[in-house]
Image (cartoon, rainbow, N blue to C red; front, side, top):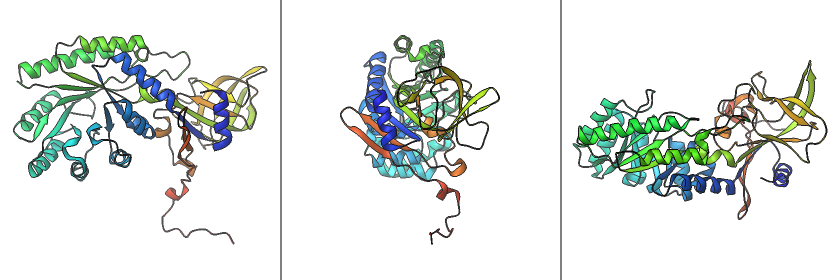
Length: 401
């Protein structure tokens, strides 16, 4: 975003503040779609940033939903149920039934365990409606099922006239920087899908695959998997599979990261020993970069308003929390650091605003705004106090006398 736009937002909406640029979001979605090809479907994992769900539903084929809260967001935003890919390691019976009673056979559903399969089996038998299921193959973690359990689930499902095994779901982790990791996983999945066809006599038509594409958050930490060249290699690995079916690539971070900015104002500056500190009104309860450890790595950061002129010094940026872990970045070169100026952290559109310790010390939740050339500025969430959630609900309301 232009510096003038960031300065305007800080002045109008205050800090701390999240900004999501919808033009950048659209551009990134178009880049990913072009790089992977029209033949490859796209799925947005909305846990990366639910504020972007409405827009992303226009750019992708599916929206991954991993909780009842996310389902409710999609329902209230009137996301077409045909686009919902209902996932998540825990699906309680009452939750599955609620989603099924609401949208039924219109959605697609992952299966994480034999127990989950029986929930779908019971509902489909009672309502005589066909459900499209995606057993999830584990990568050795708590998610999904091993190969033998997947085979058992498919065998049970095939005994029902109302359960259709449409595809297989696989996701093994995030922030993968080497394309060879994609290639190895797709080779493994290719062997399994051929085994299903030849030995299990099961035809799988679809693969939902989460490659875990890395986003280069920090200076000097590039990721080939995020580049056009790396995405072309992923596309080629898909085309090279002997199994021929439909592939949907599931991503969250890769779509959303670049469109986000986090603004936080410098409230105090000081020098302890040889270290220059600036204290901001935000903190790591609101800003989170995957891989950051006590400010060890340097994200892209700039100062507003005005330009950075004069001698540059090394600064350690700390938030407002009462913990020594609240270090946003260390030894970052800045000039003209003073109270009242605002630090802008870039690439905060994915997870950053979702993963922090939002309730710690009862600080308020920052406002969230969006910007686009056509729609202008929109307030997506006002600044909200959190202290009410950290006290008994029956506490007598305080009134000034």
